[in-house]
Each structure stands twice: as C-alpha cells, then as structure tokens.
Amino acid sequence: MSATVLIVEDAPESLEMISTFLEENGMRTVRAASGAELKARLQSVQPDIILLDVNLPDADGIALARQLRLGASFGLIFVTARDSDEDVLAGLDAGGDDYVTKPINPRTLLARIRSVLRRAREPVITFDGWILDVVRRELFRPTGQLVELTAGEFNILVALASRPQEPLSRDFLLDVISNRDPREISSHTVDNLIARLRKKMTHEGLLPPIATVRGVGYALMPTPPR
Image (cartoon, rainbow, N blue to C red; front, side, top):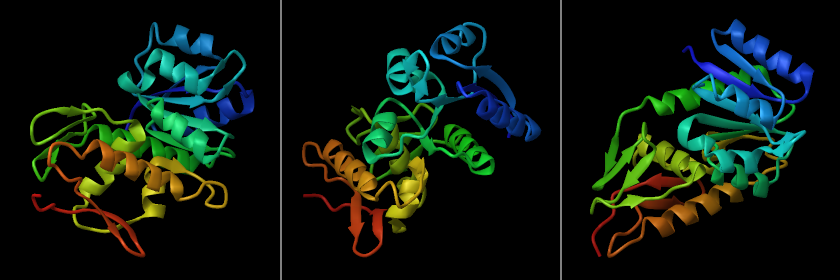
C-alpha cells in the first residue's frame, strides 16, 4: 500500500529512523522539523497522511492540527510522548485518526498508517437506517441529518459497524484509536467515547444501536423502536 507520508518531527534521529523505515516499505516521505516547515511543505505537497509530533519547537501539534484543520483534509496520526487519557482524547478531538506513543516501534507505526489508509478506502456502511460514509468520514441518521463526530468517535463506530453484532473488547477498541501501553492509558478512554457516541446518536425517538456486552465490551446491535 503506497502513500505519501509527511513526517513532522523535531528530533533528527527519530525523523531519520521513521523516514528510512517507511521508504524501505514502499512509502514516499516528506520531512518537516517544525510547525512552520509543516505549513511550508503543505504549499507544495498533498500527503495521504501526516505523522505529527505534539511537542514541536514552535507549536503545540494538537493546537496546530486544530488550527489548520489537518484531520479534515489528510489522514492524521499524532506521534508523541504525551500519553494520558486527556492527551489522547484531545488529539482525537483535534481530528487525529490515531495516537501513537513514544518510544516508537516502526513496525507498529507502519501498521497504524496502513490501517488509517484502509479505513479511508472502505465503502459506505449502513446499519439500522444509519449511513456511515467512511471515505468522507460522515455519519447520517435514518432521517438524513448529519451527525458531527470527532475522529475518535468515528473510528470506534467504524470498528463496531464493520463487525455488527460481534462484541468487541475495550482493549480492541482502544487499539483502534491508539497504540498505547495499557499501564499508562486506561480503557476509560473507550468508555468516554462510547458515552459521547450514544448521546449524539440519541435523537427524536432514535435509540443508539451500541450495546454494552457485560464482561466483554461493546457491540453494534439492531435496536427495537420505542
């Protein structure tokens, strides 16, 4: 799966390591070491995906992603040492498709990149009258109304909708949104995103089709009318 990857990383050794590994695996890479260089590269390059460090010398990566609306135009993976639940949610809310914590495992990072690219190429998914457009990253109610979702909410819903009525564990869903050390980031991240999804998908008699499976996690299930 070929793609152009814009790597925004201020540590020269990390930038070199990531770029070399991705190129060895068929990716084209473009490098930037600061927020200013990121903006300059985007004037001439249209990457398929951006790997964005959060702690840049001239900007906060999450704030920069929100300001430039990077997640609306490109695949976006935050790569950072900041690994709390709050940081993960902030990154996903800023439009990130994924959140990978340092130290970086190159093979894991490559798998994350391929996962984001695959999700961008999947067809429309329908369930219970809902329409989930994976390419345009949009969710529509059975009434036709658009539901605004963050990247984290959207990615979890895609995972559930891709395997309907199959219970998915919190650990699996957390893997969908973030590479993490389970000792440092808890499954409460998933619970928070599910709660937000349910709230957004409850409207005018519509019940959210996300069921809690005791002792396992969550599943997308048909919902009876009220």
